[in-house]
Each structure stands twice: as C-alpha cells, then as structure tokens.
Length: 469
Image (cartoon, rainbow, N blue to C red):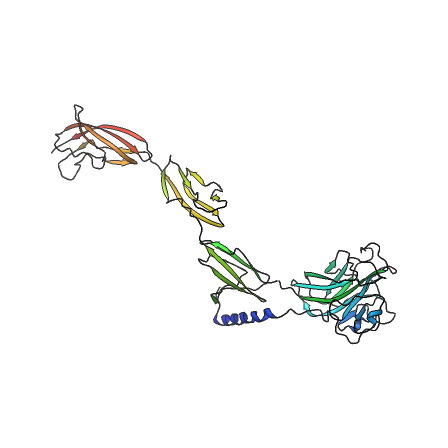
C-alpha cells in the first residue's frame, strides 16, 4: 500500500491523537442516568418529571395519577416513610421506582423514558448497564420476567396504564426478584435502526409474563445508575507469538474497524492498513497496531528449529530401482514427532518407485521443518557395440579395440584370445581397450563380461580382425 506525503503527515497526527483518546472515558448516552439532577426534590409519589430528562410515557403526573412512576431522593424525608420502602440508592442519592404489573388491575404498566444524548447508529455495538432492586417492599412481593428496554427513533406514547405494544431490543427472559439488595445487569447489543429514545418497562401482557411463586400485589422495581455507552472492547491482536525461523504467521487485529500496522523499531513505516497481516521475521520483532480507540503492542519471538530434515539431493534412478526417503529426525528433543508427506502419508520413511517431487513436513517441539526432493527415473538396460576390425597403425583412426557404443554399462572385463584359444589380452578399463601392439594381423576372438547401471550382468562374445597396413 502506498501513501502520499500528506497522508503520512495526517497518519502521524492521528497516531498521536490515539494516545490521547485512549485516556478519555466513553460518554454515557443516557442523561441523568443516576437520577441525581432534579428540578425539585420529590415530595410524594408520581413525580418522575422532577428528575431532569426523564418522563412518563402517558404524560400523567402528580396526586392521583395512574401509571406514573416514582422518583426518590434521600435529601427529602419522603424517602424514609414511603410505602414502597426503597433501599438506599446504589450510588449517590437518587433512584426511580415503577410498577411493571399490578395484580388488582389487568395489564397495568408503568414506563420510564428519556431522550438519548446521541443517536444510536445501526450496526454499532453498545454497552448497557444498570442496577436493579425490589427494595424492601411488603406490598409488591413478586418478581417477573419481560422487563425490557426499547430503543426508538421517536418517543413512545402510552394510553393510560395499557402496555405499549412494541418488541424491546433488550428483554430479560428470567424472573427477576432482589429483595433488599441491588444487582447490576449488563448487556451488549446493536440495533437495526437508528434510535434517539429509550423506554423501560414490561412491554408484554400479563398472559405472556411469568411471575415468581407466592408473590402478591404486583411487581415493583427500583432503578439506579443506568449507563449506555458505545461498546469498544479492547483492541487485541491474535496469532502465534512464537514461530520457528523460516515460518510465516498471520497476525489479526480485532475489536475495531480501522487499523495501522507498524514495527515498533520503525513507527512511521506503515506495513498495512488491513485487519490482518502475514509476516515472516528472521528475528524477534515487536509490532504496533493503531486503531480508532487504542494502541496495542504484540511481541513475536523467532526460534531456530531444534532439528533438521534432509532428504538428500535430487536423484535419478533406474526404472526398476526403489529409493527410501528417510525424514526421521535425530535429536534430543522430547515430545511427539509428526510427519506428513505430500500424499498425506504420516510415516517417517517413504518408499519411492515413481518419479515426482516429494515433500515432507516434520513437526516437533512446536516447530515445523520442510524438505523437498525430486526423484527421476530412466532406462538402465546395459547395451554395447564392439568393432569387427581395427588398424593399430597410429594414424589416429580406429587404432584401438574399444567399444563403439556403450550405454548403461557400469563396469566390465574384456579378454582377447588368438585363434588357438590362448589369452593374449585382458583389461577392466573398457575405455582404454586393446592396442594390438606386437601382434600380427589376423582374426582374434573376444569375450566381454559387464555389469549395467541397474546391476544387471551380461556376457558378449565376438571376433575382431586386426589389420596392419
């Protein structure tokens, strides 16, 4: 990948900003999520509107209101004598309570809602957490499932105390009941559509809702410390951290969408802007990955294989021959050794009778070593042709009795006899032959015993005329 000069300066600026952005904390998109900020202290029930940013979906507040959640704050003595007996907030001084069902009124629902500080983007992951409790309530002693969070582009409207007929993106399928203690819940989610509002409550009918046993009165929950942030799991590099010299490895960066790879020793030289890279360093190397939110260091260690594999040099054999390729390693290494040939054989030795390129991979002690050999075959049948006349007159032409042609003959023994059967010459140097010196013209008889390249033996006999001119 190539970068122009202006791009490089821009990239370096971004890298510096990365270090700063890592230190910043993600913004909570739920305003007043701990209910600390108020327009007035709550003095009675049904005063959710006093918690800045929060509202009741049916728009009804105050004395006698139906389906209106409650706001509690420890700075007013109302907190200590209300009938719902809330426990102290999970943090700070404020909390909200709402009834999600009422046994005396079918399908009774209360909801709390707020406009988010920023639009939720489809496909992006978000992290939601909150604290939940049933307080010390003696009138509402049930727990239920179906408590949910619905994110929407527009605010939802409830008709008096009726359920809002939407499907929440987050739904608690289990029955939840925590008497006199808080429990933190956490969710990671993404949306298919953008959203600017969140509404909290039970969006299902009584018939669709399950309740804890021996409960009565209804289900009432306290909420505190709601937090919604863009989910940014820590940048991480996955891949083998130790490789053997000569091997390559794929390193992959995850948990972000934008990456810049560099070697720590050359921080301004961009290796890649892809999510993964394949590297084959020859020495220990440290890599840095910069993303939108973080910077991470990855150390890659390079070791020498503790063994060698040697199949030998490329070779050519006779067609009838066979070679045993031996990949057995001989070392002091412990552990199991694994062998794999190009034909998926898993034995240390392979018998070869056909031509081809043979490859073996041997693994031991976390290292894999590979070697390759090419084996060829040829015809090795021995064959030779002897002259029937020679003229030892030192004219440089046909002066010696030697084979005219000799193919695939590895060694031989030539003997020459006169017409009475007496041995007159013998040699194992076929290329030197018989010079005929001191012998008169005439017919001589010869016998040749030879061994071919394929170790096949044979005999040849004939006669030759020695002419002197």
